[in-house]
Amino acid sequence: MKTIPPPPGAIRATACAALVTAALASVGATEGQAVEQLQRYCTASWRNARIAQQDWDDCTQQALERLLERVPRQRLPVAIGSAESSERRELNRAVWCTVQRWRRAKRHFSLDAIDVVDSRPTDRADEHEWSQDLSSAVAELTPLQQRVLKQWSEGSTVREIAREMDLPAARVSDQKYKAIRKLRNLMDEPVA
Image 1 (tube, rainbow, N blue to C red):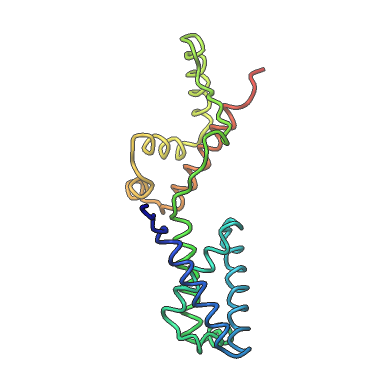
Image 2: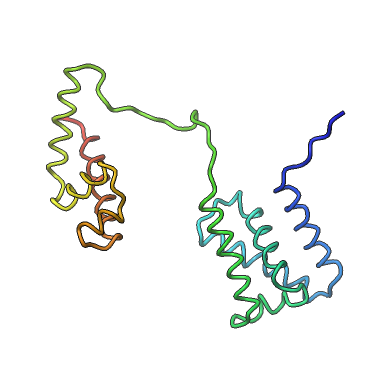
């Protein structure tokens, strides 16, 4: 019978849990309390980063694993106790790296869970009316929003548009967002 090896993430999570358990078992109350405080610190960090609550345990394991790779276990109390220490900087790096990894991770979800309504027309007469409504909605945008949307729809990135218009990328991104939101609102309004 062929055995299937566990996925690499499961091995890392098990190893991390074993490290934390061993650290708690082999140390005094001070280090054990430090690990508990580190876990609370991580939980607060995940909440502030708006990470989904079901992912908090995994993120804590990843952060603690990274921290234990860089800080000796006897220095864990310093990581949580002293805000100016190099150990705290390592803790903050571990938390930051975990947040960034979580944000970049691909999320899988079922298409059944999404309620998608296609508002595009189904026949030629409706298509003409829909096109006119869209043109009217685009006319409601500011000239800057129109330019940003036109270039973006032609495949330019926000940075490219910003460079061409000599504007900050944040402003171009904001104008794009506002234009799309305005178009959605205008296209969803019922016709009187």
